Image (cartoon, rainbow, N blue to C red; front, side, top):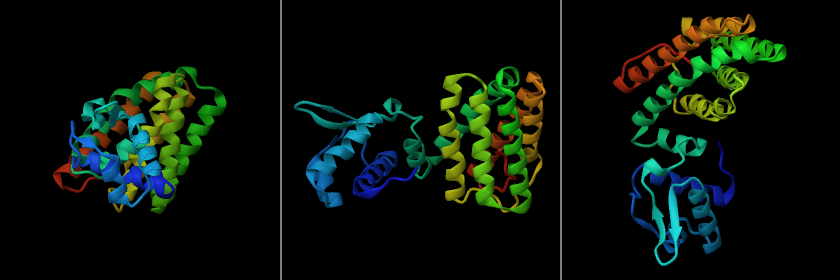
Length: 239
């Protein structure tokens, strides 16, 4: 997610500092300090702090001021918060948490999609799977990320579970961030990528167990990829 204008720059700068631990839990964030650091008016500083408060990174109380909250209180599903954590020294924890979340949710979403998705949605999922596979074979990273994000967004939405559907922003942020942070390998085409076709086919044919199994294999490979990245070794892409 791109932040626009001066206001967005201040929000982004403060968010990065919070995720990096430069502003620690319990510390007081003074508007005067924000103004001085970014060279902005008090109005801009105040609005930026309000955005952070809406994400639960800080809290504001009379006679106390703006206080940094512990990470456990943050809205950790917010796409901007995810991005800030992914570019912070705590990137490893964020990558692991995202991998574990996907492993818990996506197989169940695939099984539900096989039971509930409308015919047009089943077809759309297959189209994204084909586009993803074609982009991987062509080495088209931009097209790959676009198709991959679309595939998982449709899959989660097709489950019919509104809470699963809203997790699509979380997944998309991870996929886009891996491109931006240069975490994609040179070779995109591999069995884990092509397994998206297995998920789409199982959903299209109403085979819930097969859909869950194929989705589980994708996220399991993605989890292994995360561990490989954290360990500093090369690993084929699983999306």
